[in-house]
Length: 113
Length: 109
Image (cartoon, rainbow over all chains, first blue to last red; front, top):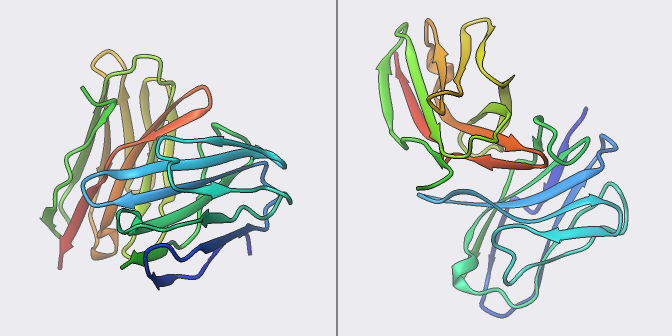
């Protein structure tokens, strides 16, 4: 089954404790992206990757890191999480950048205390 | 003015009604227009997309784009309780997709 898999689904952590949210896709997509979704603010892009070893900042990259060492994986790293990073996070992928059909994961609800 | 404006709702309508969801935008360079549906605790999924102006129909759903007015709509006919979700409009210029904030829709049985 074609899918984007994110883990974990739910995560509660404390300020400053490094964490990684994993994302994997099985569709051989070139393009992958991370979004955060907050009430009243909608989906905002954090980082994206057009291909292996190619990443770029989205609209809200501060406090986040990403890497794309393999085509299928695109982890999101929070080196020192803060409460303002409490949000619902989505990983998405598509065949190419700008492709209308983005495939989204089921989301990771992160709470930073 | 924000690039994409979408009324957040919630919008509550009785089962069987026709639903109209709308977005306005400011960037005349947008070429592709999309509607994503997001169920509670799930990621968005693409429902429909259109290129440039005009209508596109898929079953009970019709997407409409009016580029002269910078206005797009999604119509749902014979609405069902299973249509209850958040609907996000999205549009793209070249390589960037911009999402609206979403409209929460409740179909009342």
